[in-house]
Image (cartoon, rainbow, N blue to C red):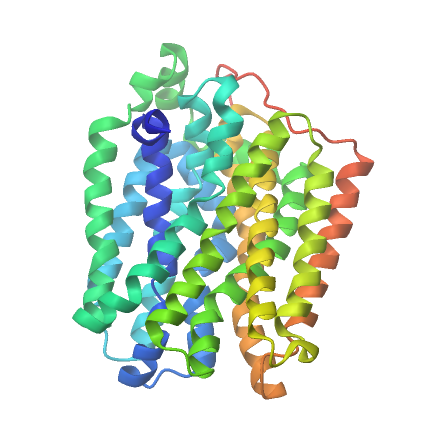
Length: 416
C-alpha cells in the first residue's frame, strides 16, 4: 500500500482526492452559508451540483483538450484553477458569487480528473492496472469523507471562509508534488509517441479523436449508467448533514455520520477492482449495485421506517457501500471502451459529460421534491427510477457479452 501511495500513479490518485475535497467542501458548510449568506435550500442544491456544469456542457471537449495538452499538464492546470477559485471564494459575500466560482471549480475538477485514468494506464503495469483503477474509483468517496470529517470542526474554528482555504492549500501543495514526482510525456512515453504528440496537426488530431469517440456506443452507455449512479449518490450523501441537522443532531455529529456514509463507498470500489480481476462479470456487479441502491433508499427515506433512525442510517451505509461497486466497475469499462490510446481522456470526458448531467440535476431535483412533499420521504422514488435505468443499461452490457479488458497501448499513428 505504501508503494501505491508514493508512486507516480499513487500521486495522481491523491490529486483526485484533493479535487474531491473541493467537491465535498460545500456539504458541511451549508448550515453556515445559510446563516451568513441567506442561502436557500435550492441554492444549496445548485451549489452542490454546479461543479458539474463544465462537465455537463463541455466534458468531451475538455477531454479532447486534455489529450492534446498532455495528461500531466492538464492535471496541474486543473489544480491551479481549483486553488485560485477557492481562494477567491473566501471573499464571497453573496450566494451568486459562490455559485459562479463553483462553476469555475467544475472546470478545474475536470481538468484534474479526466486525464487521470489515461495517465494511470501509462504509469502502471497491466497486472496492477485493475487495482489502481479500483483505487481511483474511490477518490470522490475519500475526498468527500475528509471534507465531512474535517469541515464541521474547522468551520466552527475558522469559519466557512477559512475552511475554503484548506483545499486551496492542498491544491497548491499537490501542484508542487506533481511537477517534481510525476514524469512528463517525454520522460514517460516512448520517443516516437512523445514526438508525435508535439508534431501532430492539432486540428486534425482533435477532430479525429472527437469523432472517433462520439460514434462509439460504449462511452454513451457507460456515461448514462454513471449518471444514474453518481446523481443519486452525490444528492443523498450531499444533503445528509442538513437532513440530520434538521433532526436535532449537532453539526459535528451530522458531519461524522455523513463522513462514515461516504467513506464506506471505498469498500465497494476496491471490492469491484478485486472481483473484476478475479473474473466476476461487470454485469453482475452493476446489477447488484443498482438493485441495492434502489432497495436501501426505500428503507432510508420511506415513511414506514420513520422513527427508526438506526434502520435508516444502516440503509444509508449499505446504499453507499454496495453502491460503490458501480464506479469502480464503470471506471474500468470507461477506459476500456476508448477507441484508441489517444482517445482515453476524450472517452472519459464524454462519460463525464453525460454523468455530470445526472449530478447537476439530481441534487436540486431532490431538494425541490423534498420542499414540495414537506420532507425527504419521497427521495426513494427518484433514486429508484435512476437505479432502474442503471439496471436496464447493465442488462444491455450483458447482451453484448462485454468483459472489461485493456487493449495494448498503441504507438501514435498519423492523424490519431
